[in-house]
Image (cartoon, rainbow, N blue to C red; front, top):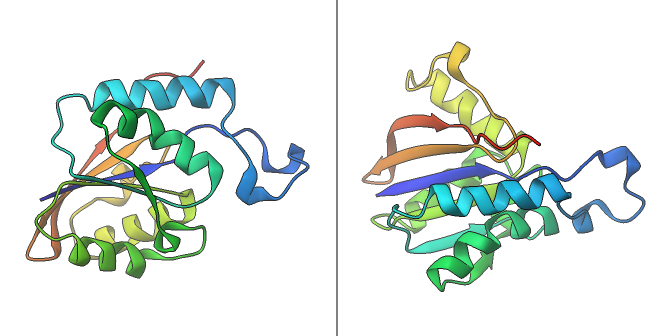
Length: 155
């Protein structure tokens, strides 16, 4: 199984947003990034699209889900502050299926820290740009390899 762990696309500066952070949407750049993510994954087999319920995460994977005629399934396990153990739990829960997991930078960082500790990723290669994806290969509920896939849209 393959899990595509995504950090949400550009949602602007948190400090400039006046409403609840959960409702902060993607910027125009973020919307372009979300479209590019969908296009870049057009050949990937995907069974399920899971996302943090935060608006910016849902908006990041909506184009991909729409392209596949799948629905975006909100998961509190992918919210800010959820931690890597929740991502691992989702991998176990969806074992054997190809899934997209859209989350936040802090959660991706915790997963990367775990992969570094397990020797699957070197600290020097542990990138987590907005709208990037970590392609995680899972076997028996365990991550066995991880490959970083940056996104090229930055304007």
